[in-house]
Every structure is written in C-alpha cells, then in structure tokens.
Amino acid sequence: MMRPSNELPTVYLCRDIVDFRKGINGLAILVEETLGRDPFSEQLFVFCNRKRDKVKILYWERSGFCLWQKRLEQARFKWPRRDEREVITLTGQQLNWLLDGYDVIRMKPHEALRYRSVL
Image (cartoon, rainbow, N blue to C red):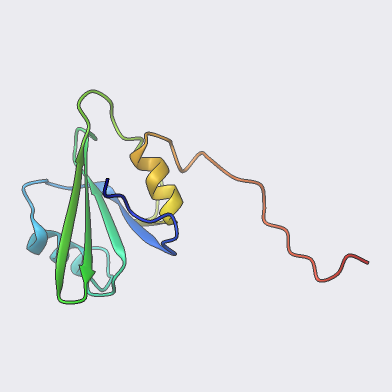
C-alpha cells in the first residue's frame, strides 16, 4: 500500500475546490500562482474536487513530479472549507487521518507541554 508518511513535517492543503481535469502541470501552476508556494520544494500539496470524493497529492521527487490520487466509492472527505486561510498546513499524520475520513480541523490534541526541570 502506498501512503504518505506520518513523519512528514509539513503538508499544504489547498482549501478551495480544484477542477480535477488538471494534471501535474495545472496543479504545479496552481501551487505557484494561487498558493504562492514553490512546487519544487519536496513538500506535499493536497487538492480536493467539488464532490469531495477525490483527493490528489502533488509533490516533487528529485527529478520529477509525482501525482497520487484517491477516489472514494461512497463517502466524502471532510474538507476544511470554512477556514479563512487559502492554504492549510497539516502534518503527515493529519493527512492520513483526512484520507481515512476524519475531520482534521476539529480534532485538537492536548496542548504540548515543555518543561525544563522536574523540580
């Protein structure tokens, strides 16, 4: 099974709906012009169609672009459309939760605590 790694530090999710007739070139242009990101940065860029039953992931790997796609047969992805940000940042684990059907925007883990001493 091919799946994005949970260890990915940053994944960029395009909040707006995308025309899925776009292939690698169209999505790379969208990353650069609309999202204001570098499509060659070896980051993952995630897009969803209008019906929210398909997801495409575009990324650069050493010498070329890769395009990964998932199509749901009955369900819909919980796509964060009410967020005001154009681009939403996720972790690799959050991306996999999204692919599994979770609403990653509403899922909020406990706040990370950082201590310097136990005394």
